[in-house]
Length: 491
Ligand code: SF4
Image (cartoon, rainbow, N blue to C red; front, top):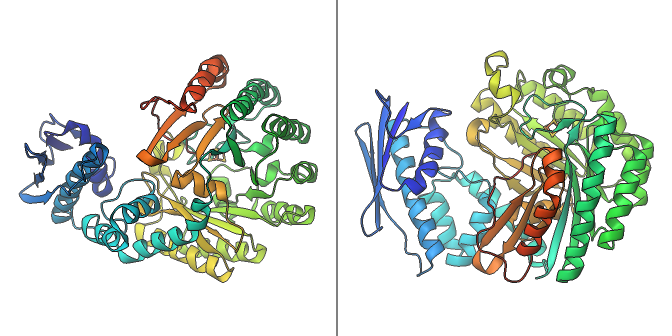
């Protein structure tokens, strides 16, 4: 247990995140009795100097100038406080941290914003000196930013993306924290009723506000748990109320055991350009262990089927660090994926989320070491390169083994614009469905306001009119500055 004493309680969670980087799910309390460690972190009265101690170690850093911007002032204070905590922890418990003290999920966004505000050289200095980010990770973030630049520059002032969520899956994965329902015929059909209403309200909001639809993304869960007729109805309805699907439309086909020729033909007919078929691993034993009801061979068959229907933009998701997997298992997975040659590859690092079955049963599922996961992530990069794919977006999650990252790789002209818009928070997102997150981006103020739809379908259905009113307010010109803030859903 760690006792945390601070005069900046508003940054307590941020300090706790630094502690958890080093000591995992340790308990942190201000009033801990007989703690294993005592950390103090304080800001002086003028809010200019952050200082701290930890079991005999001491550190202090000046708060960087803020240019008179109140939001920026708070950011700089928070950074100094976190930097102190990180420096103390490194003194007491030296540990290799590829992303240094960064705990946020969007390092590329941070690097871009720092470059815009202070210039590239200063952004690089802050990444390496203030946040202690290692050079290979800085290079990765800078490479991705360069790839994203034209896509970010192409966002119009009234552009928005539409997200439609189908929170159902055939089985629940061991590591899932999203809370997807198990798909059963009647419940899925019943869900489409409020969903269609939600989408219709969104279409009216788009027209009334003079917004332009940029991209559409059907995610989940697994949207292809819908049968072909339901998919056809959903796409037709969306096209009708939104006047199309925008310049890019992605459907997560997720699990191969939900994919049929008929469904793929429906998607193709509606102009869906991009799908995801997500193996996570090509080892049957691991697939069984993580609770997926399909084999690696079925993944190959679904992929071939999608190619035969004409899909030339297929993403595949993999997870490095799955329970029981070795570096050789991961190498075999990459070999199998390279034989298929997808157009996008997304390599995730396993995150052990609080509400997952994995978290509850960690003793039953031995995980690969940090060094092994690091090797897997490097192998993923090399494999993508062999296939002619390059990193184009990335994000980090809490509780990732080795404090690493998730990286999306794409071939030339095959990037998913929605993924860039969403992870970089450069385009507002109007989201439909239970557990879906609507976001309005206020670019000039570097501010993001969110509205989270309820997770369970009955509450979502009941709250639809309220949600609609909240979205209308958020997307009106004089949107409130503090709409409901909620954590990002994590399918
Ligand atoms: S991790 Fe994704 S595919 Fe697996 S159960 Fe959760 S939502 Fe479904």
